[in-house]
Length: 124
Image (tube, rainbow, N blue to C red; front, side):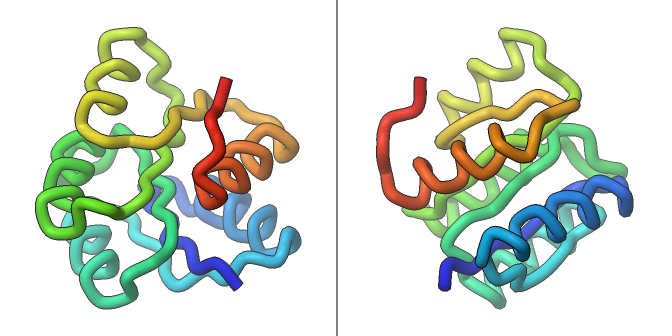
Protein backbone atom coordinates (compact mmCIF):
# COMPACT_ATOMS: atom_id res chain seq x y z
CA UNK A 1 0.00 0.00 0.00
CA UNK A 2 1.41 3.37 -1.02
CA UNK A 3 1.80 5.92 1.77
CA UNK A 4 0.83 9.58 1.27
CA UNK A 5 1.36 12.77 3.28
CA UNK A 6 -1.19 15.56 2.70
CA UNK A 7 -0.10 19.18 3.20
CA UNK A 8 -2.78 21.89 3.03
CA UNK A 9 -3.77 24.71 5.39
CA UNK A 10 -7.46 23.97 4.75
CA UNK A 11 -8.93 21.27 7.01
CA UNK A 12 -11.71 20.80 4.44
CA UNK A 13 -9.21 20.22 1.60
CA UNK A 14 -7.11 17.80 3.68
CA UNK A 15 -10.23 15.84 4.59
CA UNK A 16 -11.44 15.76 0.99
CA UNK A 17 -8.06 14.51 -0.29
CA UNK A 18 -7.75 12.02 2.58
CA UNK A 19 -11.19 10.51 1.90
CA UNK A 20 -10.59 10.33 -1.84
CA UNK A 21 -7.14 8.70 -1.48
CA UNK A 22 -8.16 6.34 1.33
CA UNK A 23 -11.16 5.15 -0.72
CA UNK A 24 -8.74 4.44 -3.58
CA UNK A 25 -6.62 2.21 -1.32
CA UNK A 26 -3.82 4.57 -0.28
CA UNK A 27 -2.62 4.94 3.31
CA UNK A 28 -2.51 8.49 4.66
CA UNK A 29 0.53 8.70 6.97
CA UNK A 30 -0.07 12.27 8.05
CA UNK A 31 -1.73 15.61 7.49
CA UNK A 32 0.09 18.92 7.83
CA UNK A 33 -1.63 22.33 8.08
CA UNK A 34 1.64 24.26 7.62
CA UNK A 35 5.16 24.08 6.23
CA UNK A 36 6.97 23.31 9.50
CA UNK A 37 4.72 20.32 10.25
CA UNK A 38 5.06 19.19 6.62
CA UNK A 39 8.86 19.07 6.86
CA UNK A 40 8.75 17.23 10.20
CA UNK A 41 6.21 14.66 8.97
CA UNK A 42 8.09 14.13 5.69
CA UNK A 43 11.20 13.33 7.75
CA UNK A 44 9.38 11.06 10.21
CA UNK A 45 7.04 9.16 7.90
CA UNK A 46 9.10 8.94 4.67
CA UNK A 47 5.93 8.76 2.52
CA UNK A 48 5.84 7.46 -1.06
CA UNK A 49 4.16 10.72 -2.13
CA UNK A 50 3.39 14.17 -0.75
CA UNK A 51 0.52 16.39 -1.91
CA UNK A 52 1.54 19.98 -1.22
CA UNK A 53 -0.42 23.24 -1.29
CA UNK A 54 1.38 26.42 -2.43
CA UNK A 55 -0.26 28.79 0.08
CA UNK A 56 0.60 27.87 3.66
CA UNK A 57 0.31 30.08 6.78
CA UNK A 58 4.00 29.93 7.77
CA UNK A 59 5.77 29.39 4.48
CA UNK A 60 5.22 28.96 0.76
CA UNK A 61 4.73 25.50 -0.65
CA UNK A 62 7.65 26.19 -2.98
CA UNK A 63 9.97 26.75 0.02
CA UNK A 64 8.65 23.57 1.63
CA UNK A 65 9.20 21.72 -1.65
CA UNK A 66 12.83 22.91 -1.72
CA UNK A 67 13.29 21.81 1.90
CA UNK A 68 11.85 18.36 1.24
CA UNK A 69 13.91 17.89 -1.93
CA UNK A 70 17.11 19.00 -0.10
CA UNK A 71 16.61 16.30 2.53
CA UNK A 72 14.97 13.65 0.33
CA UNK A 73 15.97 14.25 -3.31
CA UNK A 74 13.94 11.27 -4.57
CA UNK A 75 10.72 12.27 -2.77
CA UNK A 76 7.70 12.45 -5.10
CA UNK A 77 5.68 15.65 -4.62
CA UNK A 78 2.48 16.77 -6.35
CA UNK A 79 1.46 20.40 -5.93
CA UNK A 80 -2.29 20.80 -5.31
CA UNK A 81 -3.19 24.49 -5.30
CA UNK A 82 -5.74 27.10 -6.31
CA UNK A 83 -2.78 29.13 -7.59
CA UNK A 84 -2.53 28.08 -11.22
CA UNK A 85 -0.34 30.89 -12.54
CA UNK A 86 2.12 29.60 -15.09
CA UNK A 87 5.13 31.17 -13.35
CA UNK A 88 4.30 29.33 -10.09
CA UNK A 89 3.61 26.04 -11.90
CA UNK A 90 6.93 26.33 -13.76
CA UNK A 91 8.86 27.15 -10.59
CA UNK A 92 7.33 24.15 -8.81
CA UNK A 93 8.24 21.81 -11.67
CA UNK A 94 11.78 23.25 -11.85
CA UNK A 95 12.16 22.55 -8.12
CA UNK A 96 11.24 18.90 -8.49
CA UNK A 97 7.46 18.65 -8.27
CA UNK A 98 6.25 15.70 -10.35
CA UNK A 99 2.92 17.28 -11.25
CA UNK A 100 0.64 20.24 -10.50
CA UNK A 101 -3.10 19.95 -9.89
CA UNK A 102 -5.15 23.17 -9.87
CA UNK A 103 -8.09 23.47 -7.45
CA UNK A 104 -10.94 22.93 -7.84
CA UNK A 105 -10.18 19.45 -9.09
CA UNK A 106 -12.07 16.29 -9.87
CA UNK A 107 -11.50 13.10 -7.89
CA UNK A 108 -10.82 11.33 -11.19
CA UNK A 109 -8.03 13.79 -12.05
CA UNK A 110 -6.36 13.53 -8.62
CA UNK A 111 -6.41 9.72 -8.63
CA UNK A 112 -5.06 9.57 -12.18
CA UNK A 113 -2.17 11.95 -11.41
CA UNK A 114 -1.34 10.21 -8.10
CA UNK A 115 -1.37 6.80 -9.78
CA UNK A 116 0.87 7.97 -12.65
CA UNK A 117 3.36 9.74 -10.37
CA UNK A 118 3.65 6.72 -8.09
CA UNK A 119 4.11 4.45 -11.13
CA UNK A 120 6.55 6.99 -12.61
CA UNK A 121 4.49 7.21 -15.80
CA UNK A 122 4.57 10.39 -17.89
CA UNK A 123 1.74 12.87 -17.29
CA UNK A 124 0.24 14.85 -20.17
